[in-house]
Amino acid sequence: MAQNRSDKLKRLVSVQRHLEKMAEIDLANTTQQRQEVAETMDAVIGAINSLDPVHRSFSRHYSCQYSKLQQQDQMLANVQQMHEMRVVRERTKGDRMEEHRKEARSAEDREAADNSIYDLIDQHIAYKKSDD
Image 1: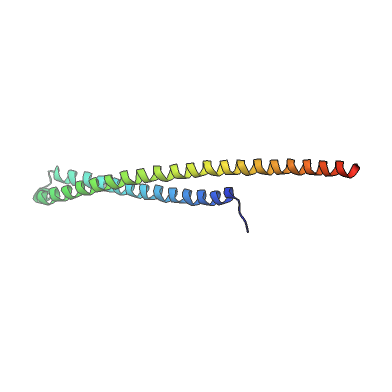
Image 2 (image 1 turned 90 degrees about the horizontal axis):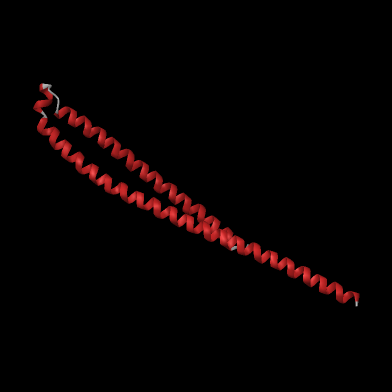
């Protein structure tokens, strides 16, 4: 079964949009992880600044924990930036493919219109010859 170019591009656009959605989901997951790390960092800072004697005895442990959380937050920030660039890249690819699909569809419509006009001309010429 022969498919025209616009139908093939339409399928590719839908696949590309799916890839874009996957990239957006990855970005959302990373953003959520960063939020969780930030909340944990706030809790650790609260424990470090606490006047409770229990927390004072663990202040060294809390500072190590906070240091690890900062490193994790930095790593997640880098991952988040990577995902943001990926989302933009996938969206741009999808938009470009969509434009190519529209152009192909327009060209196919023009070709179909031209062919119908040629058919009408051929029929008219054939009709004229049959009258002679």
